[in-house]
Length: 81
Length: 150
Image (cartoon, rainbow over all chains, first blue to last red; front, side, top):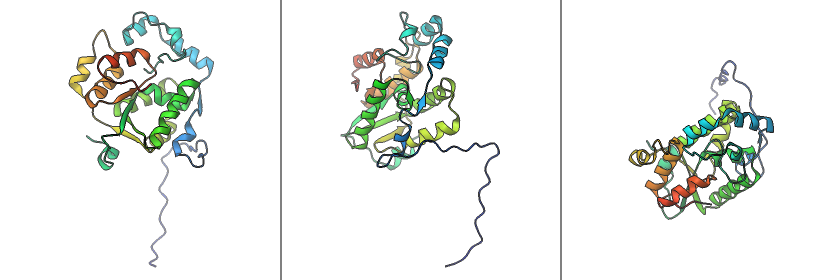
């Protein structure tokens, strides 16, 4: 077997943080480890709601009767769609 | 331009094809709404079992990145891994096309949501079903012959 020069490790970009993430779930595709992984605090939800005014909602979504409190209600729309 | 997955994996035209919106992607990752997450997981399971194909339009990927960053404060390195792994799931394909004439038909002062117009355009043009938790969008899609997945 030919012996080449040892491969140089690719230098890491400066400031690139390490990221490992949750462990893989045996027998499941990799993405399944992310299901429900991130947590949104009630405070953050309140912030998101607060940041949207009724005018914003009318302008952005064209739904005149849109209720900001319904953003996170069961089965209703959220801020992304 | 066709995506790598679209170009290399022939799509079975007989398989039920379901386009997903941004909220479905986001609901999978977050402890936010148990019922929505369960529905999303069931959809993934069916795709993994070969019962249907999940289609993620390119603009949905960008919309999800925007929401992950601006609304939930995730770092690019986290988003990168999550999105790579969802794109690698069996039965999931990213599609890059957008039917622009349809898009302009559905985007107006009355309906100014760009994402809604774009996913409607893609679903109508390609006869995809639409997986969305937004009842208003699902009802609107239905009037144009697009079957809501849920």
